[in-house]
Image 1 (cartoon, rainbow, N blue to C red):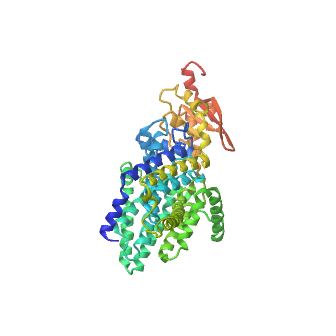
Image 2: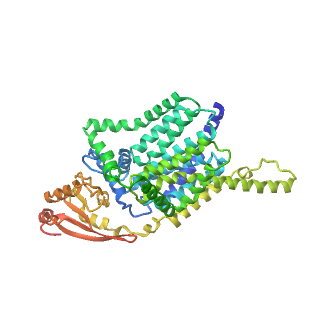
Length: 536
């Protein structure tokens, strides 16, 4: 591609009207999809509230991993900390963050679609790609680490597909593109590194492209530039933890815990064939649970794998991206519904196939119509050309269809009917806020959301009960209780007997999620009641 054509493509892609449309579509789709939205009374997902509490603590001078513990990456907490600045007691800031991320998703999705279809078609289909993704089971309640990684994966996919389809083998991958993707890999590494398998495959295939062109040192240089870019997002946190003498806590809390405690990689575990069987069975159930986007993903991927005139490295590239992304997520042996969300990055390929089929069918209709009217097909008529308003109108209709898909398929929609006054968090909030500057300990589960609705900054390292195979959590939490370190304790289903020595039960409420039913108990330190003249 010549420099002039590259500038033309770039100009075509910088379109204010398109950007405004995609941003509006992101807002409308996420308004229904995520429980962080103002249409829902709250997002009481434990994981998201845990991220919010750690992000809040970060912006109050506490060090993650050492002062407050959770085992995700630092940019996740930083972004949640920024969301906390927007609203201290709601997820309004998280919703803003999700809309911005979804807009970047759509910008990348449209760019990928334009590799296969015309600009207008790509613009129309983009909201539908996002809609089937965020209405899937793997999207879960909204605000997951996987959701925050998704824009980096989508843009990484674009750069990879664009190079192997349009430039390889006539041109080598540009250094700046390799560097940019290294930056994105570094961001993913500092959010949730399980998705790094995607970027491992990305750089591996780029290195192969240099080797095929008999440029060994180019492959080495490319890997070096990629690693340089990948290292840059680490720099702020190396400085932060270094200045606070917390480099070991960073390694222990993020790397060691996830690799050697949370996963089973350090155990003898199953053999190779058993693990392959387990992963294959897992993939089957993931597809069944998320059929809404796998129905597009599978045909789209197959159309490239088995498409005519595809270069062998182009096929290998896509196969590697799919394989290593899946392997990186699930090789550790852990599996939760939202883990599968990064796999949805390939959904766009199915819509690319659908768009090509639609364009072919419409061209045949227009050709037949033109032949009937004039006796000759001029070949200049297109959908967009027949009316300047057709593409914008179709885009609006597609966004509306996307909203309908979410409203019909998302498991979150029924929660719109909930009222704040019926949710245990807000009932407990009325009690907790009677105490000036209250402190809290969450036991028996991850952060249930009381820290959020009461704007409480965690004061204990193990401020919630982690699902980790280490004894420190329960022992330390019992010590906090014995010493009466916090004003309140929130427990789910069970609590240690030692709690009765310094605390009293002041409220309990049931909580339902699908077929699950829990009971939350709120304890208050006895001396608080005594100072108020007796039990409240």
